[in-house]
Image (cartoon, rainbow over all chains, first blue to last red):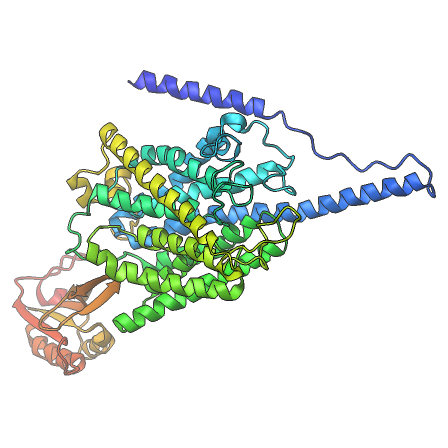
Length: 482
Length: 112
């Protein structure tokens, strides 16, 4: 068995190495600006100088966009590690802190490799309306030249690596639902399959060339999803619910007290998420212009309003506003504003945030207890519900004054959302949301069944009692005493 | 020799320690503990789940004193640890068979 595994690993290394070598056939960097051959004073000299100036302007513009996009990509990665790792890590019991963080960290590595090999291609290469094809396999053709359909002013590689960070954080969100009871091996297998079967098609449909739901590139049911309300939050949130129901409750839930072992860690994580989200939403403008500013502002306002909304609701309901509630509210607002960020005005963003904060609070404080499932870290309550609300409200508040994404054949801006007078967009939003729900449910169920049969999903009882840090990873998070 | 175990409110610890030093008690062991007598706990609320926390933080002081210092020590603790509210704590008194100083093998009261 050992020899077989070793041979398979060597084979994989060989294949990846060969692919990497071939992938180096990229187009060269732009050459230096040549001095015009014609004489100063002639009209062709002027024309040549103008052409040079235009090229320099384009390069300066590209430089600004690329700088912003690379920073955005880094910010989004930071959202997973350490943002989400800390946020989730603080919410679980001490004996499971490392295992929880390891889940996010592993995905940073695993999804990257899958993305590089074929994941990016399956999402962003043209194929069918539901799936890309393998045209970009091993990142062939993804180099310094921009892909004009996606982002005309930044190298294709920048776009690819930016999108990778989204592909990383989406499955990482799900880990909250099965926290404290999922086998590490099962999680790795589950996530590898989920990335391909659920994330890749959904992302292709909304953002890929020829995608069924692509609002920017003429999809059949144009769903407005600026930064991933449906692609990231609805899919992960709904999948989380399926996982929580399938895996069952933690031992002792709900009678045994399982408070967060460190709200301090969760607080730090949540703040990193808020700041990182600027890369997530404003970076989805794919340029450093006014749309990025607009999305940045909307993002921030949504978070703020939602934090206040949740905290106020909790204050009224419980008598005290908790820190965990306030930061959860901020996250809920950020989730809800994600599909809307580049389409709505600042006041609309406040409204979206406020609604999300209050609704998600009720979801977590009342509905979850009423229904009785153990979604340990409220992934469905915040991401599933928040994302669904946000996607619907995007259909309400999207305005052509902010982003004239729909144009007629003469290039005139068409109404976008309900406040522009286009009620029909709400139907499109519903279609997009519906697709996300269905793919998430069906895909996740199939994968869970398969993984359960292959390696078993849940840790044995003694391991759950001992804690996953020791049982899965042979480590303890804190060695503070003798 | 008597062993005095006193479980007190953490906020009263500094005053109790100073009072014991003042009457000549030189050795003590201090532990951070959790527990309750009749004092009710409090509820904490995390994201929709309410928990009753009834193990409250206390300070436990353990000391072994010569017989003639035992009652004085108890009085010193009572005076400084008392707030008058439920949760002030308790003192327990037991007899000690022997005490030995590790550094030089001294035994009995001389070891205290």
